[in-house]
Length: 248
Ligand code: GLP
Image (cartoon, rainbow, N blue to C red; front, top):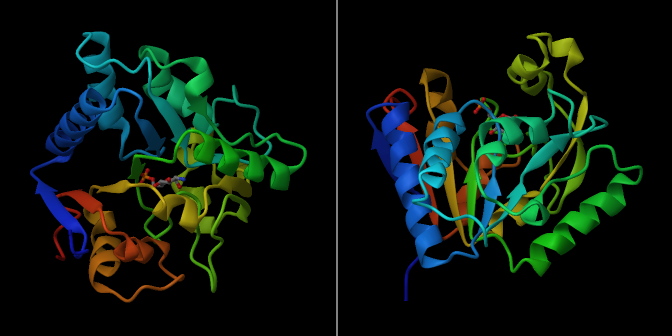
């Protein structure tokens, strides 16, 4: 029996090497299980991975025709074709280039009139798909994963969330670099949704992530640093470049 240990930490020379290693890992997982269910993240960090991975699919070396995806989160009240939506981000960086079946791409709908029902629908769809096999995560400098922001308590399941100012600033790139245009709310998978994935890969790059990575690995488990909850999972790999690993 496998004894749960601390998260595995893999340090890479740079972001390209990190993206390459993740591409190799995910391609192998799909070869072993073509009907894989992937949990996907947005943000700057996974972009290189999505590009390298999409190239493999375009070359016919990976087949996504049986695979399903569930994205972590979406801004509230943005239509999916709004250029700032996470759905547009995914269309640009991955979905527009690969052979995923449209009906197996899953997203929280930020325009749903009843957000509670929408969150319940999403949780049910994850269960109906058989659960998430590999969840890819980035991390905010404040320790958020998905849009689970630091708070006195965390929500276990998909929920509506008010974004921290720091998070809105970090996402301003999608909104003409104007933080005031970033929606104030979002829908996000919850902490239990994330922790129920069979395996988790957390990506972080750059010196600005070094403190949060150190605290994620060495600090106490606290809702004030949502990423610290990954210490509770039995199969987590933290992939970092040398800059993000500089305090480990
Ligand atoms: C957003 C996303 C997170 C992501 C974070 C980090 O807030 N909701 O899922 O991890 O950005 O972004 P970046 O990779 O750009 O640092």
